[in-house]
Amino acid sequence: MGENQACQSFLPLLSAYIDTELTPSQRTQVERHLSACPTCTLRAADLRAESALVRVGLDIVADEVDFKDFPQKVLARVTLERPPFWERVSLWASETLAHERRTVLAAAAVALLALSPWLWLERAPEGYAQKRLEVQAVSVDPSQMPSVQPVVVKTESGDAIIFLTEPAAAPPNQGEREEEGGLAPAAPQDTPTGGEL
Amino acid sequence: MEKNNSCAKVPTVLATDDLTLVKRIKTGDQRAFKLLVERYQRKVFGVAMGMLKDKEEAMDVAQEAFVKVYKYLDYFKADSSFSTWLYRITTNLCIDVVRRRRAMRGEPVEFDETLALDTSEAHLGALGSRLGTNPQKSALRKELAQKIQEALEQVPEKHRAILLLREVEGMSYEDLSRTLGVPKGTVMSRLFHARSKVQKILSEYLELDEKKVGVGSE
Image (cartoon, rainbow over all chains, first blue to last red; front, side, top):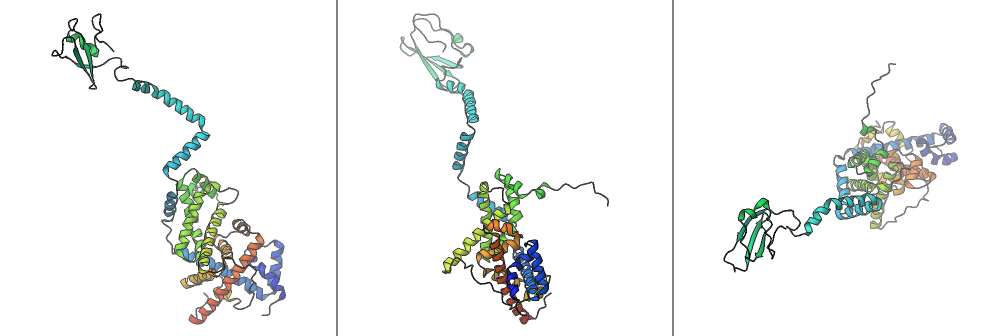
């Protein structure tokens, strides 16, 4: 088989010809040449066979591989490469503040309003902001000096409030003191004896 | 012909195209990402295997390609097809590996594209006549598959990438040009070089093999 000089110009087109990537006019020229050139016809057949071989050969290799866990392995690598949690939180926070400022401010205002009674209550020591105290027991220590009479009051939470009183007047009856969980107002005196908070 | 009016509904998962899955992945849908991986895993592995010849390395590169897809999905512009982008990532990863190997062996990293085309008539018709129109019958031989791998290894990586994308994915020359960032004329030329090289190696092997074992073509 002698090589035709014309074959040289058609050789680079043979690959594109078997891939059907030639323009219509190019395809016509190649087909005309192939009809007259057994050498190039054999070359085209070889190219087709080689193309199919590569496809099938790679299929054979892929058939031997188990892809069952492949997506999970990819996801495991992806998860490992995610930024740390705090970095993601800070990214989310900065993005939210940048793009949802009004929503964030409104949510903060609502939260503040909802929490404010609790916050105010928390400031005052217990007892001073409460409407009434639940008094569990009242005791008076008679062994103390007559000028001072400590009064110990225990509340539900266990706190003890000590009132020092002068025994100018007879102490009120115990029953009066334990009225409805609050200290009954003391009888009018010149000196204060303690009373309802 | 009687018309069938009871149209079976195509399950959504089968009808979901790549771009729809991409949109879902961007919202954090890992199931959509898993579907996309399953759709392309075999072909991506095939390209990587053809480029690298080593199964472990090909598996690693194939996984890495999908990891990059996940990481950089926000940068994917829907003006090109997803597969084009995926294969670009895959071939770039493979070319990096090949170049690293070559550098470690002390070989030149870049291939001289001005090498003359081999148009000898030796082994002309060997492949075509040996395999006929049914290459699968012959290609079922494992050693032939291995020979194909060896032949591919002798093709420069840029040419190899084009050949593999054409054969594995059936990419058009237009898509190949976009994927690899080279003009269409370059695609044509490289593909022809790659095929000629592989064809020559396989023809020599098949003729030798035929002489050894006397096996017929089909």
